[in-house]
Length: 133
Image 1 (cartoon, rainbow, N blue to C red):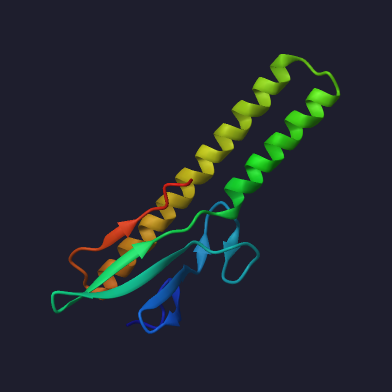
Image 2: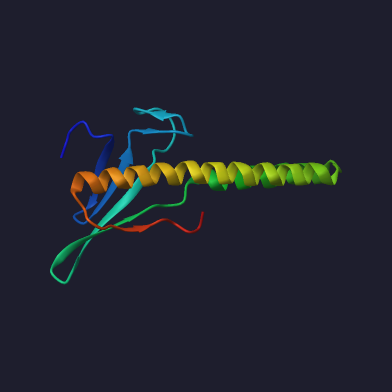
């Protein structure tokens, strides 16, 4: 494998690896900056004499943070007796931010998975994108 690849491989166990992208849109991570890198978990397993590869993603903390902040703003609005329009505005903004982040992260995870598949010359990969997001 190439040493100048756009991702880093960290071995967790003999059959499990975490693969992290060096750069990411949306979290301003470029070559070791702040934020959590886009990453996937690569799991090797044996089946019928073949080594199979499963790649999965985990929920991102940003989704929970956006939800918490939205609920916090709604709570403050309720305690201040704000208008219904403000509640609806906050809910719409929270949903739009969540959808935007979800789209950006999924797109980057797909790019990372495609690069892994290409470099490892994999024909088919079981990809499990976390449904909790």
